[in-house]
Amino acid sequence: MKKIVCMLLSLGILFSFAGCKNNEGGQDNLGTSETSVEEYAKKGQIPEQKFVLGADIETVKKYYSDFVSQYEQENPNEENTGHSHEELEAYYFDVAEGEKTIRMDTGNTSFFYEKAKADKGVSVISTKETAFGFVPGSTIKQEIEMAFTSKGTTLEATAEDMYFVIQTDTSVILRYTFENIKLDFYFTDNILMTTVIMNTQNWTV
Image 1 (cartoon, one colour):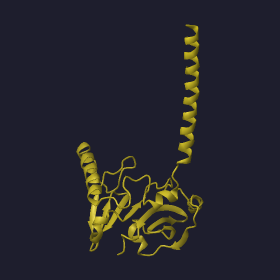
Image 2 (spheres, rainbow, N blue to C red):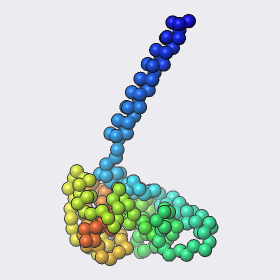
Image 3 (cartoon, rainbow, N blue to C red):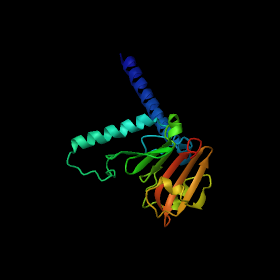
Image 4 (tube, rainbow, N blue to C red):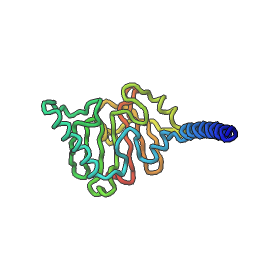
């Protein structure tokens, strides 16, 4: 009987060590699997955003339309100012149609696509919200440059660039290009204001 008890105790200790080892391995894996800013960008993804480049247009429209409808039903006396609440994903949603393009706007984030390429999904995402961990209104240009292994290009914003942003006082863009993905950080007085990611193959107007 004593032998059986000893054997069970030994097995228990052995499995305890094995469990600890597995946990340590799990922590190591988590540490090495962190996705970098560049990896997200190459996938056409802003990690804080619900949708990525190439997302289905109708899915995006339905998601935000339903979200806003639910919010308005729950808050019938809330004034719609055209801007999202900070604590909400969106409580405003508008679709603006141009001659060749469509802009879907949540107040803080806009999704663009070309009418002729609607089957390609979202082609541009522009956001005034936190993107890749960078906070508009407080993150400076040098902080973003330090997060990339590749070198970005600094240039003056053109009228064409400003099509994707609401504010008009942006003067400088820090641009990174990864094959068909273009990632722009817009600055005013060296402070991040807007982040724009684009699939240049699907946005050609």
